[in-house]
Length: 160
Image (cartoon, rainbow, N blue to C red):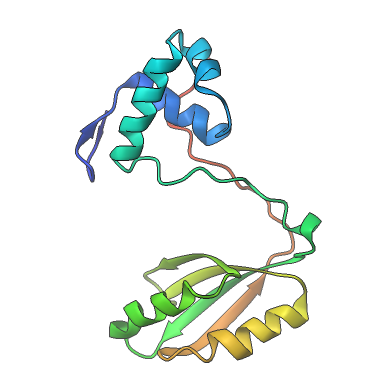
């Protein structure tokens, strides 16, 4: 298998390592090695290669925001005044901690973003005091999530 963007050759073992880490990023190299019948050193070297090639961007904890008092997940369709304002808006969105995901898109919206808030008052503050103050944002449409139906990593290959 070849990654086109990075032009790095990845084989079945690399695909299995990526799939294992996508399912459980805290699994030790020793445990991954046991599953794949390889030494922890071999796993370490391959994971380093995958990081260096930027196939692994980060290892993160999947937090339970509701348990921490953040009960609102909302999605925002963001309309830009002009498409050439994207870079400036992107830079400003990165400054807002509640914006956890943002995508430059085709279709109705220029940017589609995900934000996490404590409650509707917090959401209103983010919208009115932070997002609407960004130069280049013409308007937004807000969608409040009632329930997360599915959230999973893309598994590249089955691991026994």
